[in-house]
Amino acid sequence: MKNLIVASTSTVHGSSYLEYILPTLTDFFKEASTILFIPYARASGKPYDEYTAIARKAFAKIDKKVIGIHEFDNPKEAVQQAEAIFTGGGNTFELVNQLYQNDIIPDLIATIENGTPYLGTSAGSNICGVTMMNTNDMPIVYPPSFKTLGLIPFNINAHYLDPNPDSTHMGETREMRIKEFHVFNETPVLGLREGSWLEVKEDSIMLRGNHSARLFQQNKEAIELEKETKIHQYFK
Amino acid sequence: MKNLIVASTSTVHGSSYLEYILPTLTDFFKEASTILFIPYARASGKPYDEYTAIARKAFAKIDKKVIGIHEFDNPKEAVQQAEAIFTGGGNTFELVNQLYQNDIIPDLIATIENGTPYLGTSAGSNICGVTMMNTNDMPIVYPPSFKTLGLIPFNINAHYLDPNPDSTHMGETREMRIKEFHVFNETPVLGLREGSWLEVKEDSIMLRGNHSARLFQQNKEAIELEKETKIHQYFK
Image (cartoon, rainbow over all chains, first blue to last red; front, top):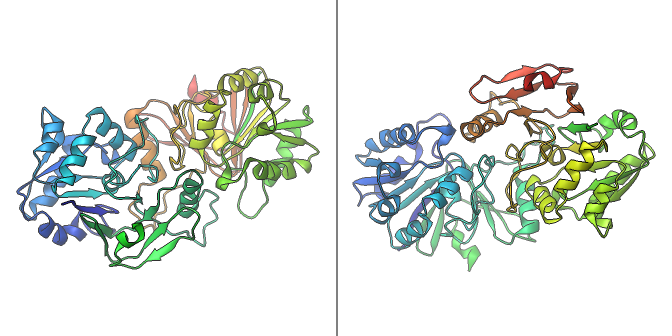
């Protein structure tokens, strides 16, 4: 049975890495003693070891060990044999590029479909969608495809931001960008605000955390979904 | 002799389309009676005709005719025979995708190298760089490559925004994104604020408009370049 937490962000303002969601993760990862960390998104360009150390420090607080996927000779086997998996944020283009370079996409899908608990934050959540086409990141590398894991029937826009009514900036708002996406694509998009996450248990998808989320569908007005909404009801 | 205006934005807050730069364009396009408009970036997802009408209306104020490239049977010939060219903003991924689909990249390079005046705004400016890798846009389509026209020896970050010191948002700032780019790439990046443009005359590149610009180079601290700086001196 699929069992995922798909979080907008690793960190909310004014608190430490993963702090806001650690109580939830204690229960979520209760069957696992070691978590496989995928640092491929290289938040702020960090080397894998340095990024893994940050995840390791956070999970030590709930008595979990963390091993980076780069510490294994065979990343496909690392995924296949993982007790639990966490993909951190950073640059989604580089994350997806590395998922393809290391050929672990089929292994991630199979392992997660088979029930291995998966936590994604930010870029690590974007890849749970059908494509990475609603990332906010800069295209700093050219991945072989934008197709991602497709573990949920829509795309994620992480760190969703409402338009600032006082802004004099002429660049597009987040909502405008997602509307442009729907000129070319049918896949629905969920704008997930920082501090929100999806709890995915097989076909059930619940919105958790303290915020509503914004659902964008092609040729429809965007709608606000209150916290604790059963998101899956919109994808029957 | 290359002759380009590479502008951060088509529109500054509180004024109409191209209004802030029309006096400059009167002189820039003085030898041309008709401007070829490339609407491929489809600002806000607009159909080509609708987008072209907006450019046409603005240029009518300085007595220029505008024809959209989609009105020609052969877009390559349209570029080759143009008196002047303007590529408008919108989504850079879709713009680059269409440049490749219509196979006009070699024609644009040759025509512009040969002296046909070229105006770019936003996405239309991003493509003047070496790659489109510093766009702010969402990857709503998958272009065959991120390589662009290479008419200037660096990349453009249009609509450059300084970090907001009061923000509680945890998504990356523009500067952080460009620093991540330099983990993987050597190409320098110029952050061009709204209301600024580059005036490119063969090997001379001048910063025009009312703002300083921010130059990012690999393994160096970012530097502010005052308005009227000779940008080319940084690329000897």
